[in-house]
Amino acid sequence: MKKSEVILITTIILVVFSLFGCSKSKDKPIDSDKPIVNPDDPGNPDIPDPNKTLYLSFKKSPNKEVTKIDVDDNSSAYLLIIESDQKWTATTDAKWIKLGAWDSENPKMGLLLALQKNHFTPRQASVIFKSGNKSKTVTIHQSGAPKIDFEIDDIKFSMIYVEGGSFWHGESDFAPARYSHYVYLDSYYICETQVTNEFWKSVTGNLPYDILLEFDYEQDVADKQGSKPKAPVSVVSWDEINSEFLNKISYTLGYDFRLPSEAEWEYAAMGGVNKDEYIFAGSDEAKEVAWYYGNCEEKQDVAQLKPNSLGLYDMSGNVYEWCFNWFSEPYERNEENVNLPDGSSVSATVNPKGPKSGTKKVVRGGSFQSGYIWQDELKVKFRHGIDPSGVQKCWGDTGHPDEPDCLYSFDIGFRFVLPLN
View (cartoon, rainbow, N blue to C red):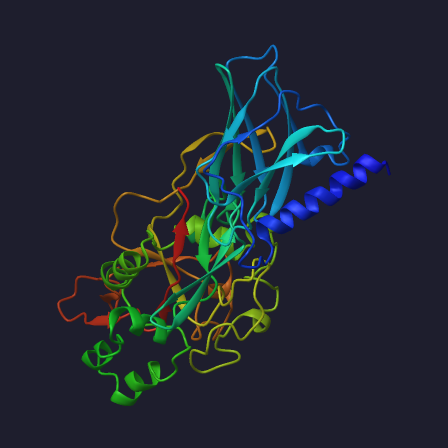
């Protein structure tokens, strides 16, 4: 390795450490609000890693030019070598981007662009370079953290990043899920686990099980449903989730949380871009990933069994999960051309939200009561619809004057998503 390369690498390490390391109180961090000004001749030093080096030339170039950089969520640094006959400046308003002057032994000068680790959602910012009447913009898009941790009233919950992509939604051999069609989804975050009793109570101030008494359940059944703080909440209606829980938590934390669309739920259950081919969410063996009639008599604490490849727990079994969509059979399709990140294009239904109206909302995933005879309800492709109130006519709404109401939300809970668009 050349002596100049060794000096360059050492300099980058020292500057990155000064920008991100644990500094003493006497250290002076670089003030990125102040423009960095170069000497008259920035030069062209030897660069050991061309993938982490950018060359910007103001000679014989358009007045305005934009360069885009895509980076992951980790901290990283880029060396920028600027070619110009005049002095230039570099500025950015993003606090997660630090600008540091770099000077080699020759002497030749460039700019070190250091990016802090991203602990939250994807973000984008720009560094603007100016020389005379010309400007260049380096736009940086940094991926979001693979997992985000939140806390509300001492209750912690985590959301897992689901990278957008395309997949076959539905199952043509399974009547309620006809017809299998290609879907493209944007990226989003989804809860690592189902919402628990303690989580629901921390947001709403109560538990929802008193309604059981109105349907002739014994008091001990209602008490048992809420007796495990870390078991998933159930007996909650689609209406309650949206009007009470999601409305309150969105206001409290300042983000627009919502129930997942049916396509988002299925895509996440299948491992997203991992494209898992399991029958259930994370395995072909129900007992490995699901609480159901074959291994329990009641709902269990979340996250006790094996997660799927995205790290999501209980997407098969424990309790059913409400989705945002109205239920329709077969699936609606509205295909259009989609340009993929690799440059190719596909014909797909983009971010489907289902029909605009209906009488029932989609529920997915099966529950602790599933599997008495077969395990179809636990499969990632299984779907059916329930009235959003959680209450339906017991005989299938026959119109008979003596047909009673039944509470169908006994084993239905939910998880929610944080959309990025």
